[in-house]
Length: 229
Image (tube, rainbow, N blue to C red; front, side):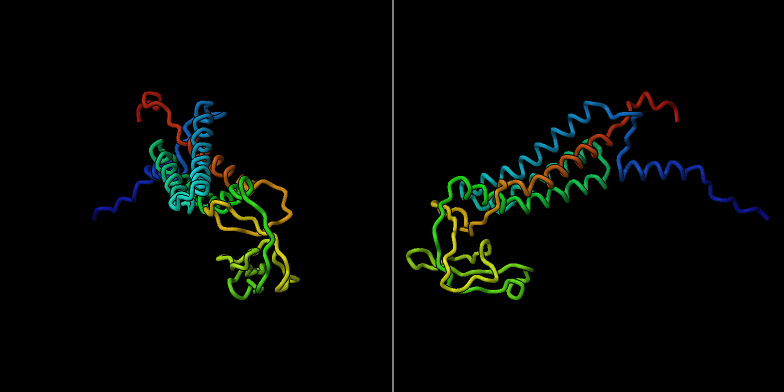
């Protein structure tokens, strides 16, 4: 009776190496990564982040909804992920970079609107007509929403939460900044002294770091250096 052969385990190391390369990238270098790849990763990540934020700012400034709503930023994030796929980056790192790009694109419109209002906005006093607890109406913990009218008594189409608090009452005056060209919704004025785009800096830095890591780990040795298999 013939003995059944045991499955060969020689292919297991090669399989694990293949899976590791597919998921995280080959990273076939010893010591520090090549400087060329570092520069390429920084350039690609910086251009991607700048494109995502820049399209949102351009859309808010010019009033183009397709740009101001972050749709163009999502396209830029997808283009960056496609670039990483073309250079042979690991799938996990491509996914992380794409996720960070989407997060940046989602948050960019609000920051872009704040930048427009900071550059050309005008501040006027508005009268509070009603105050609602946002924790009940919109599920926004810790926020209160004020309905206001402008100096001519015309109700604003948006409710204001910046500057609106638990102590605010109907009839109170609320400082509101608005865009004279009407391309950005008005918002309340706060005492925050930081720039409108500061909140995007961590997301942009994370996107650049993920891109650099993906590009560096995509490095493969030239075929003739691998030797016979």
